[in-house]
Image (cartoon, rainbow, N blue to C red; front, side, top):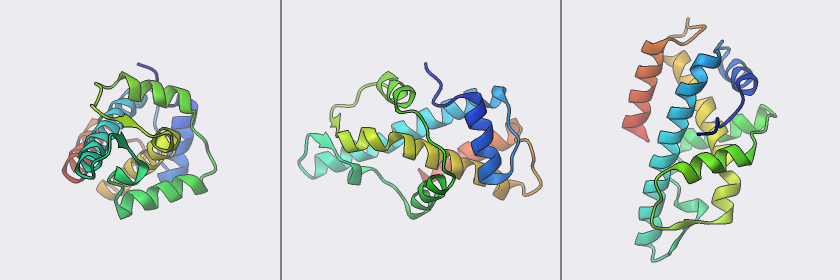
Length: 150
């Protein structure tokens, strides 16, 4: 599977979002996290599209909470861009859902991945305000929280 972002971009994004130092070994964890959360968002979005009698998932079908929306906006302010191709490759590698995704959904995937990444970085600081380099324990707790909420 392709990496959703390069190591340098990942390290920079975590540093800018929450003052955290991460390394290349954390990149696999981030990829797993992003893949799982994007899949979760798309499953709920597909159910919403079906409930509304549509055969294409639209952007408004994605369950973007207020907190995630704020993280999307925070990502926008960081003035960093993620490449679309590796993210779309990650999305297409997921087990197929029954419905297609609209162009708008595909176009917004880098921003959603960025927002999830910012949200994750900030979650580490909430779990442990003194953390500088998240360890396995931090990753496990953060993922458990996201699994409850997303």
